Image 1: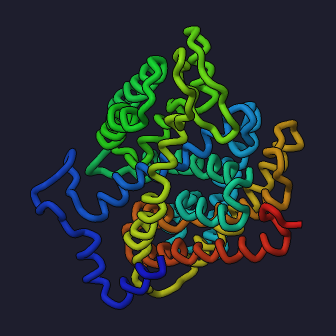
Image 2: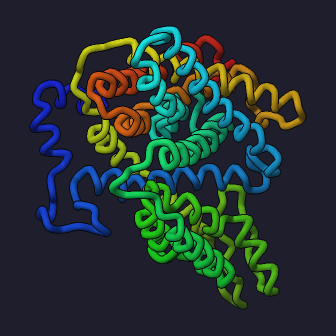
Length: 400
């Protein structure tokens, strides 16, 4: 992220040429989209990041996970609503404070969708550093962020439509077909994760592209169908086959043939993460570099409106809604208290790349668009705030 910012502000033209470089020539397109470096990173590579993130959520929803039974997912979903209404409401309030009575009020207020976004990639990385990789707050934040961005995509489609590429909901039937294919493969005990990704994931990706909806989310609806340790054991019992014991580490049970020595094999869900985790972690550098390169421009009230709405609005909205849900009988994940909730809500204020995208949709005039983008970039400071508060409150695994 820092490298992208520095490069963009030293030579913005070279940066833009690099990001928009047509790898296979100007005439090469995929479903009408030019195959640029930005396209490969944002719409193909990020598919796998969101897939890994979904795996974390799926695992948390399995028996013994932080979000199982499913009733436990109600709290983070309520927090998601707070993460939308809180910053949007604060943005409208600040717009009235700074621009009330002026001719620009309606124009500025149109940016209310910018602070509703959460950058899943960075929020996930920051949360793992602050809480520890296995802390239930990470899964809580992941589910919240994915749901938050799903709502954000709806906001973009409804309130900030692209006249050149209108949303085509009928193509979502292809996504449903991909889900059906993944379900059928699971029922037939297909044990190789690439088959699910290439066939079911491919159908989902094409469906989202043709629907003019963010294709990076293609695996979000496919990964939950990959058999995990518990799922494969249950399926094996249905057809009467004998399988070896599933150890806590999560290996897939395999058929026990007479005279054959038993051995452990990873379940498709675990193998998917194990084989892609390092490449995805490495690729996140390029994702941040390609998306955070915004040239510094004049900082106006719009900058502070976006920044304050993201950090303060998210913190107050998520904490309040989740706290109310907890009191209403929908508890936080086991091992997660109010202090963890507060810090997770601050981390959710990392709007950054998603907020940058929405800012480009909300404002056409650079007078408002550039300061709004600066606010989105400066929301990276939420990580610093969350880290400091997290250290003070001792929220990390192993802290006293």
